[in-house]
Image (tube, rainbow, N blue to C red):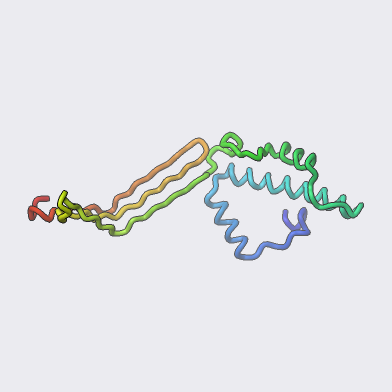
Length: 151
């Protein structure tokens, strides 16, 4: 597609191809289709402008009317809302991993009375139409320093 319909663009480097594959692996099929359509419309608009520029040595930027027509054809709004993004489009992914954390438990006199050791991971994924959270505790140990062998 890129060589045939957008010959003015340089070929992707190996690093760019790898990054593109990685992005597409993390998106839903609907999101990949949405962004590919967006790219096709932008390339078509640029090809149209390049044809005009070639014939009349015109400009390479879209006018306000052309930009409005482009946005209308791809159903784009400058203030992107959830309703415009495809269902399942992941807006945020947060992954926190905690390895062997220790928290000291102190009494009102600031004396150590115990300790908690924990290893855990937390995943938050915010997508259009769905939210997902996942908490995995792989290690949890509560140590009582006041009464030996009480826990």
